[in-house]
Length: 464
Image 1 (cartoon, rainbow, N blue to C red):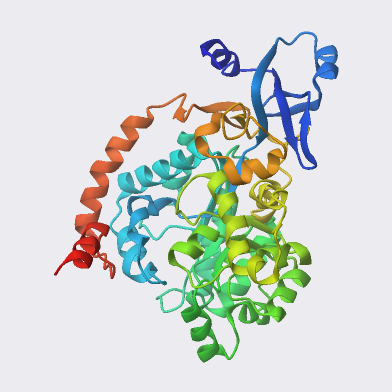
Image 2 (cartoon, rainbow, N blue to C red):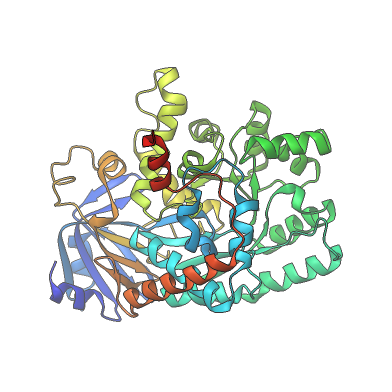
């Protein structure tokens, strides 16, 4: 598409967009179009009908393109972007050695820049929503809200409410949590969430309290659950219950809870998730890079357990995340059972978009191309060698899609990225500043790595 199309897309609106097809929950609808007005989808339907009912609008035709929902990242750590590559080759449970010291070394500018850098990478990968699980940086979380807002991405913003082993009382923690939940009411892009790092990081009073506050506010509580075997064993030693069982014992499970990772699940724990309506963030790349197991997402889908897909800050490419979701299920479960479908492609697109929006508490706001929902969408080039010879587009998007095929990214009806670059701010300048700040942060942070760099590992392997 040329510059004239970009200029048409960048108009304040209303817009009448006519691509080759629109990706609806039931599949690609050829010959459909959308009307975008006031940040939302004003109409979705056959293009001929829209042209007839909106004669005052000049249609912007998008030949060779698919209009699809933006991806929803159900689990991210925005202030860890300076150290994304530090997880490579490391054994599990690196948060104590890497993420705690790294985030602890961030000042306000570094935290803002790290969060905006992560937001830029997410937008480039087709994510229109990111869900931040809370930062350990000693800054006001509004720094992260500002970074996401300035980048132009929708953000579910967690406030860490850990209190175990700290000199604070339950009432103080819950008062702070309640104020955070009210802080972003009416914000067009930022939605408040509460967070607890792992169940053992908060006292029973706080776990019960944040669950109650989130349920009352229609918000989410994000907790890392069953990410590593060590965490499961610690919970068994301390409580005689596995982490998910302990949360259930405390009354913390429910539609308000977003359990990040949720690997190593027993049949009983799957039943607890299904019976309570608890949501899960399935993070397949994180499992491969720094985990012990793969969440049984196919079993979750079969049981009706709500789940989205999360990057855990690994890499911000929605198509590669969907492919990893399918691939991990095939390797972990499909091969041994002879399941050659493993979700039939559509499962992973669905949970990367509307399923993810539902899991993070935004199902009534985004995740689907539908009248009245926020106009968070992608314009994807399907004329590329990878996608042009299409026999089953949803499968091909999962297996052969990548962020290079994303021509435009819209959030709240506004054009945020065009061919991978921001339209209203200087992306390269941000990257340059992030590179400068990251060096200073790494010099200050007491990060401990077990695995050598790739170059050092190669040298060792070839040494006489």
